[in-house]
Length: 273
Image (cartoon, rainbow, N blue to C red):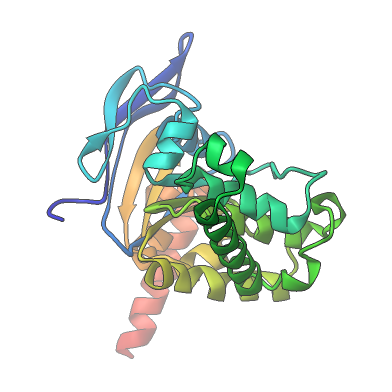
């Protein structure tokens, strides 16, 4: 395939007179792992909602492998290959852990209603393959021993991992993760970081990550886009983003910019000494 896997060109959305997202652009290639960061209210989750059809952009385009996704409902966008997790976990709490993943596999099912009612050999073979695939994903996320438990009974960190497994069960081309490490302890974050790092190569996908924990982001992604009040204020490698005055100001205020510059100068002087 020539060109980017995911192409986002100047999408914007306003609520009344408030520009929630303004001219947001992004280009992701296959197996890229990219971060989307910004202070609270910057427009990160709104950008995800625009990409996945929850909101329709006022202008701009979203394309996956050259196919324009604007105007499609969320389930069709998921079927096209753009899957996501949510900042607020959205599992099926009364279904088992296994069934939460298995139901996502049905998005790619080939058999119809009649085959299911008649329980044809083709239907049974496909159902078996879906269960095997679901269990393999649960094993990857360390949840195989909880397969028969209700999703509501999982600890918070396990629910986050289950939501990721369910998103991967849709066989995405691009996976959007909205604060996957939220609420996890340091050990859980380290384990999750290692897991996410391996997803692009394991599943041949691109990953776009929203995360407030800067330690997780800086250690994980190859590039970062920074939003503030719906505007893109910086794009670049983690090392450059860490020192960008606009980024420091957005997170910490103008006084922190001068302090960060002083620290950078001190480090440069020490390095030459």
